[in-house]
Length: 324
Image 1: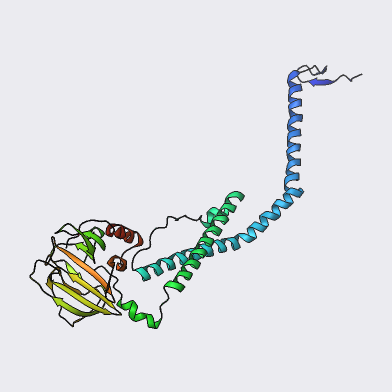
Image 2: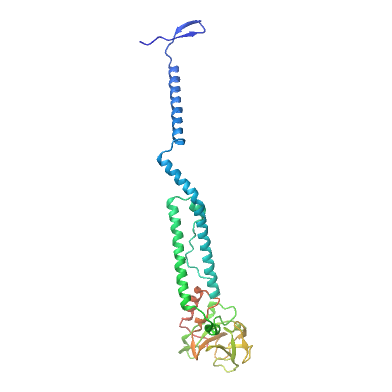
């Protein structure tokens, strides 16, 4: 049997029986609940920050290891990017030194992720970044091996090779050369006078009168010929470059060198005209090796990229009418 509870009433100054109060009951229950929640939160705090579970111990150990190796990984990524940039610059410099023009775009300009992006990425992104770095290094190594093999077999130059290399014509024969100026190439073409097919021994480069004609390699002037006939080469120059190479520059307006004169590559020798058997101002340019005419387009090397050379070859292959 429950005991009856009394309380002292200050107004009546007597003890009175305690009556049931809903408000007091709710307050009591609320107090117990609040106490329980606080006690439970305290237990969770103690468990999470004082007592470590096996999984938490493993994760904390991994975090410490990552923190220790972050510096090493950062240094490795920085060194990798530095080596990639150096290889790219060396490749560009080598191409420019060999061909004296900008390297063509290979279409593989993939941007590697920055160091900070790799370090804050999740596991999948990190693995993908490492894979990208590995693939890029593999591509560079294969490219370097292929280039080394090619240059060792095809582009090795010794002292006995220097005379032949220096004697080879390698630049365009007119000043401010543009690809579209090559209007007729080497091979079978249509003669502008009798409209029959014949073998065109050189290339025709259309240019305004007075355009400077340049020596395509160092050498000595072999022939300077002036002619008033409306046939043949008209005014022309032949230059002996040694090692069997001779170049011929025809239909000139002016001849500014003399027979026997020593000239340098790129030196001005005359101007474009329309003398001899010519129907328009242009330069007829020939390359002769040991008495045999060769395709001059194959000697347009310096100052022309591989893309431009491909366009030049396509222009020279057109079966059109020559200008002489």
